[in-house]
Amino acid sequence: MPDDTLELARMAYLRMAWADALALFSGADEHESLGPDDLERAAKAAELTGRASGADAFWQRAVHEYERVEDNERAAKCAFWQGLSLMQRGDMAQAGGWFARARRMLGDEGGAESAVTGFLLIPVALQALFAGDAASARPTFDEILSIAERFGDTDLLTFGRLGLGQSLLRLGDPTGGIASLDDAMLSVTAGDVSPLVAGLVYCAVLETCNALLDIRRAREWTEALSRWCDAQSGLVPFRGQCLIHRAEIMKARGAWADALGEVRLACDRLLGPPPQPAVADALYQKAELHRLRGEFAEAEEAYRATSQWGREPQPGLALLRLAQGQPGVAESAIRRVVAENQDPVARSNLLVAFIEVMLAVDDVAAARSASADLVGIASEVGAPSLQAMSQYSAGAVALADGDAHTAIAALRRAWSQWYELDAPYETARARVLIALACRELGDDDTATMELDMARQAFAHLGATPELARLEALTASSDRTASGGLTGREMQVLELVATGKTNRQIAEALFISEKTVARHISNIFTKLAVSSRAAATAYAYRHGLA
Picture 1 (cartoon, rainbow, N blue to C red):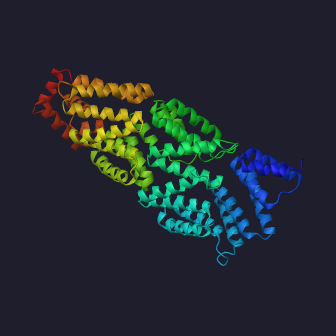
Picture 2: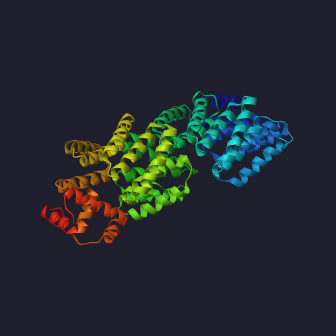
């Protein structure tokens, strides 16, 4: 082994050529045991190349060597990283053991405070946050920030800002939470933090942006993450997550085939070896893309795999059931998951699906309440995409309430915001509801043009379920134009014409008897009749039943 191998390893480490650095450090170690500083570098290189077992060995040797030279602070820092690595892999018992050992190295409560003291508060705060106790996590993150500022440790400061932002979001302060996350990201993109911290922060912030439907921020940070990954040779752990986020952006822009390709690459990377928990996120995105494209069998398989990897497959699975014509199953699932999630970050995405399902089963009251909740979250967060979705949902509810004027105003705002965000699928869906509102107002020409534009967009995207729904809507429109009935009113009229009672109609359509009565009243008004018999006669006379 050449004498300069160790120096070459250090140079590769500085260049962020992680695979080369790891190979050179390992080679030098075979020739002569590494010192603690180089063991620490080798451990980080192993982490960044996805060699978890190799990283464990180097971290543990670094701890022993730092202890041997009585540098307890550096030993405790390495023990922290060993614990955090195990914690990310779900090995909580061993992780807790290493955190406890690090505290003992610092003298538990009696030692002098240092930046490492702050790092050892991170697992305490994270455990509270993951347990749903953001109120306890927040003051701990405040303390972490205070320590970081006293000791000028940028890594710790960035960790603290990330955790504080996540805590504030869960405590219902989206403005403060997003500001703190942006602060953390500024340190990352400026290159002020170490690679391990940078990767963790990138992934956490992007996950939050996508949960909040903040497409604009997600696009900006995903592009930054891609550049960061590309600058590092041999990087493994964060490339899979980068591919997932790239796929999410492609999906939002309507490049579904490209997004599916990125997701498949992400699955290949994350399934290992060794497999990484983030594969659940890749599988969920894969399921979503198959659902949007009408590939329901593939979507079902991917949602099941998502669940097997420990991620909740909702709300996507509920929307799949709705598309498959199982509204009752969709309703039960989405009600359950919304009731279980009071976290504002998680709720925004769930509420969008909840409103769609509730409108499908004609529970307009539940949809209206959820829409008000979503509008409130959107106004606080301020993300254009979330505001657009809240306006879309509000418009859909107003349309179901029979208030076409209010509906069309909200839907036009949603369409405009989605168009600016270059989100063709959502833009087309807004056009469909705008068409329905125009039809309610008697503006058939505009309704036809909007439906034609939506049809073109869905065909270009390959959105087979939406195309089928649109064709059914158009067919219903052709049959009901003379009466001015909506699709749902047409369904009710057909059942009235067969002699069914309100209760029987409610059971057949999975709606309440009160809703049936409202539809029948609207039918009588539109057809200018005053009895079920007259409505039935009108239906047969005009070929509507």
